[in-house]
Length: 357
Ligand SMILES: [Zn+2]
Ligand SMILES: [Zn+2]
Image 1 (cartoon, rainbow, N blue to C red):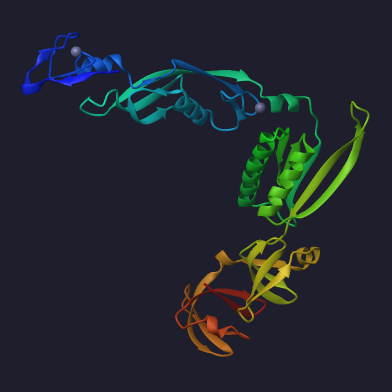
Image 2 (image 1 turned 180 degrees about the horizontal axis):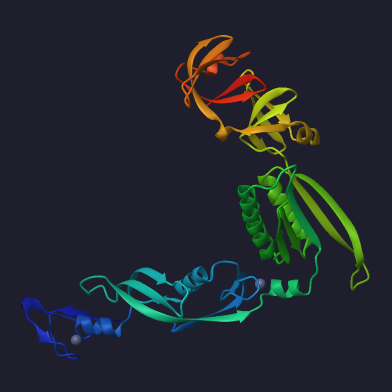
């Protein structure tokens, strides 16, 4: 294939191509000429990708549509189109959304070349507007399912809304990849909560189960007849009402006249930490719990204190807000306290409670 020779005894000759003096000849020319005539890679001058103007999905060369950032898809596709020549050690694509992407290739065209180097290629990026198959299906569809997310006796918090939207995003993307019409027809965000309106009952069911696996909801499913479809079958519209409990992790609550901290809520149960005897217990997330567990405060809003002395059944605590000391009576849990340890202080109906930190 390629021949190269190093001239002995430090002799130099003129490159037959450019006339410059050289000690090395590769395929009969100097290294610079060889490099110029032998790029590290063959890179297309242009790539052209279809982008769905409804959901933003991008069609990749295999014909599949993917829901990823256009910039990311351009980089991946371009990397796949680079045909390496010579000894290539790295291929890097720089693209941030303009008309051109830059492909950078590192290596050397021949191992007789003295060192590795970067080469850059500009590639024109063409973005063609289209509608992906899932959205074509969707355009002709009507509301088949509605998911209503609410919380009992309170509005959804910002953190909850954010979490719901992020779970919805990934679950609907998975459904969409299975070919379902999973793009929401509408997302209605109001003071009360979030409604997600879908054209696919399967996608809705998958989303409800994804949400329920990450957060605890009381789920109520109802459906109603909404006429007859083209094939003469009865059409049903299903509504899922997902109700978050009135209380959250980190809440100080009252339940059956006792005071607890909710440590965790998961899979239908909550772990309660009793502020009466500093021990853990658990409670099923039932309709009754929804009704009877009353939120009193949030742990993070409570003032801090420090344990000064322990003389069962009393613990002496000093407030770190005003440095006043006070007594707390406990029916157990002294082992979990040491002098000098930090606690949160909660006062309710004339009694004082502490939560070890
Ligand atoms: Zn030359
Ligand atoms: Zn689409």
